[in-house]
Amino acid sequence: MAIRLKRSYKFAFRTAIFIVIILTLLLGFFMWYKEVSDWLFLAVFAIISFGISFFIVQFRIENFIYRRIKRIYDDVSLLESSSLTSRTITTDMATLTQEIEKFAQDKKVEIDTLKIREEYRKDFLGNVSHELKTPLFTVQGYIETLLDGALEDKNVRKKYLGRANKAVERLLYIVKDLDLITKLEAGELNVEWEVFDIIELIKTTFELLEMKAAKKKITLMFDMEYETPIYVNADLEKIRQVITNLLVNSIKYGHENGTTEVSVENLIQNKVIIRVTDNGEGIPEQHIPRLFERFYRVDQSRNRKEGGSGLGLAIVKHIIEAHEERIYVESVEGVGSEFSFTLEKKKEEKEEIN
Image (cartoon, rainbow, N blue to C red):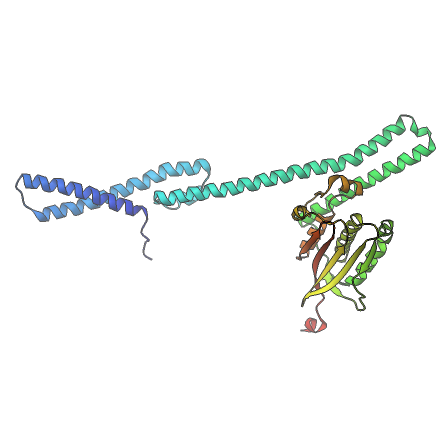
């Protein structure tokens, strides 16, 4: 394969021509002055001078760039040393400038990404600290009150121990969710695939949350009467948790006498989409992109009064992504919200035979 002309040769070529012209003119003037006329000698001199000048200039360029520029590259870790030693540096200054500008742009993007991650890390640690600190201080406060003398009063003792127990339950709930989401992110929890009726699963979840919904006078309902089962291929227990988390969120932030409606629709030939729709408070548009972050809360004071670990939606997202599916959210403030996710349908009997 022909060797591609190196861009630095252009500079060496032009410089050599410039040197040859000057030397040839000087020699021609000298020969004219001495009244010597030998045009062949002058042409041979010009050719030899061009060759010598070209190789000297090219050699000096390569060595200059290699020694000086490589040192700069090494200092800023611009390129790995192997990329420089594997070939001779012959890049002209325009290309070198482009490489440095590209390096600077890449580093800027990398720095911006690191800044975003650092902010996320700070938010996460602050949220974890706050979420754990609140129930711990609650437990500590009740125990100290009991130790200071309230232990003798049976009614106060029972009430304070009950409240301390609730705080411990909240603490355990947070730790349990943290452990679960850590395993989901690390890929340590495998999806146990099985075929089950998604309609039946939603019905049993309605029954489990019936009392919780009744306290806020919220009606849990389907969008229509599903007379036949709809079988999906997924992890039953993890999908149960997804539906439970979405319904609990809907109940928490729904209006009294409101409704939470679940629908199951065919999306494409082998997919269904499950929608959980409510007519509750809705979510401001600026908060929607961050809804699935760990501990992210739209309204800090309101959400903490409602309880929960702040990890429900993050867990939902990781479970759905572990199934290689997608989750969506649409919300209008003051109107309501809709969370939806896709699942794989059970293959038809005919397809299974094939």
